[in-house]
Image 1 (cartoon, rainbow, N blue to C red):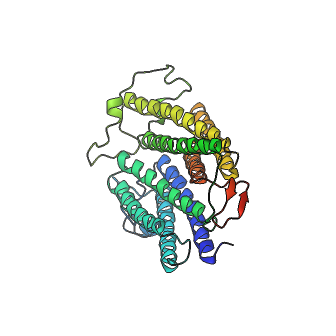
Image 2 (image 1 turned 45 degrees about the vertical axis):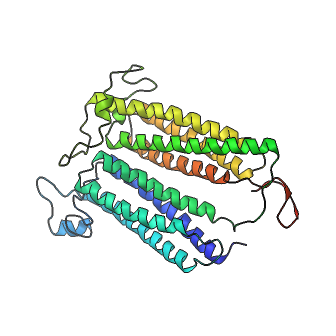
Image 3 (image 1 turned 60 degrees about the vertical axis):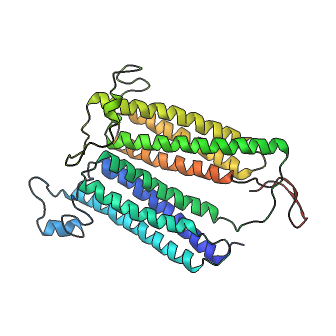
Length: 356
């Protein structure tokens, strides 16, 4: 039976995953609706806690007007991110309180607190540096990292630690090792692809290739890769809507599509190898989740281009990436160590069957 302290921490971790996903997806919606500078200061909105206070004070200027719709979207995103930060602080406090209990997490809650503080800094720079692509992409990546750590914590708290020995037949051991290595490679490929997706979105480069499977009605159109991947362009420029020429945006979009091919191949290989691990139901379930999430994400991406990049599909593409990341992390978690197949436990009691 799972101890009560683990149950509480597990519930908080899962609540954090759900809230974190909402923050990430809504943040994408804010960016895609050009509301990232709806409140041009931080942490308030034109010096007020809410857009209503800014409206009552007749805030805004001709150069930076107060647009209530954009202001509310930006502030709701900040409120949700603050709630996530508070949840992580509570989680850290409880983990510290129960630190001497068996199976209590030690380092993950601390890393999560550091992560959320860093995210707060990136959020402030996102506004004050006028949605600079490097900062906004980092904000997205570390937001997903926060969700991933909460997810990993939840996965780790699902059951009490076991002292059972792991004994596998030689063929099963080899399959497990290869599946575990492939899952790590798939995760790394997906991380690179998510970074590329963030760079594509924050540079408004999705429109660089308005057709599929070709780009600009060509298989390899003129593209400026050097200009497309300049990370730092100085301060003082408003990057909302993008500042790059079309050849640079095409280069970014093409790279994102090539990355999708690599990530798809790596994830499918990892899933196939995990499905061969017949002794682990958890690995097989996670592998099927990876395949389902991957197919969903590919379909969203293709239909998004075919339909002319509607807001709903563009936002869903961010959500799909997050779900695929969680499924891939679950696959990696399920393949950690060597689950028991046959043999004896340290107490001498025979063990049979698969670890769930």
